[in-house]
Image 1 (tube, rainbow, N blue to C red):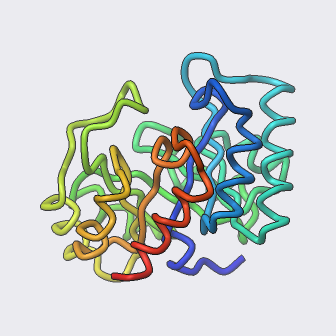
Image 2 (image 1 turned 90 degrees about the vertical axis):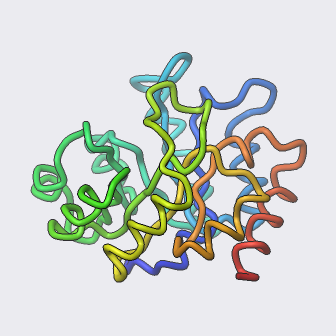
Image 3 (image 1 turned 45 degrees about the vertical axis):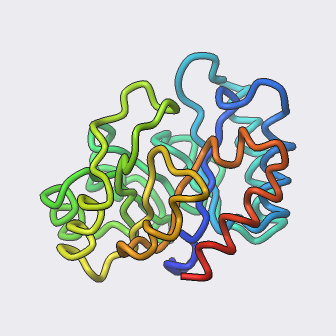
Amino acid sequence: MSFDRKFLSVYFILGSQNVVQKAPLLILEQALQGGITCFQFREKGIGSKSGLAKFELAQQMQKLCHEYQVPFFINDDVDLAIKIGADGIHVGQEDQSVEVIRNKIVSQMKIGLSVTSVTEAIAAQQIGVDYLGVGPIYVTDTKSDAKQPIGITGLSAIRKAVPDIPIVAIGGIHIEHVPEIRKAGADGVAVISAISSAVQPMLATESLLKLSDDV
């Protein structure tokens, strides 16, 4: 899979711990129907699955994504990504280093890295990741260990420092935030609750995609 920055337009992140009333597979399918451009399986935190249950859910989600020809990434779990042949792996600053991961994975598997500062972004560019997850842009309740929001100013500074690498903004993003985020230089938005908590995930996805494409 060659990595196209258009994959980042509407990047949906989901794990079973993010939903209560609806099945995660149902929400993912509705998001796919709405037009998400990339998906990340993030099974972390209180109430998340492990072992065989996590593996089976990952497989089911991967199958759905491939039916819609949407790239399937896995958060942090390198062994799982290798085992099921994911399209890519996304890691944070405190996870395994990109250099270690690259020695484990097949060459065509892509790597995304979370950054919160210009310094981290420049370092990431130097080691050659495929895209950056920049944030948190706004305050978020989804991640209990989220760092201080960097805002649009922080996003713009990172875009100027690394103009060539694809960037997806993340953290507390709602539909109304999309235009200013795209104008600040992000190639798209990464969301969890903006889709997973929506009454109609498919319609929420369509709205996010339209706003992203209109900029």
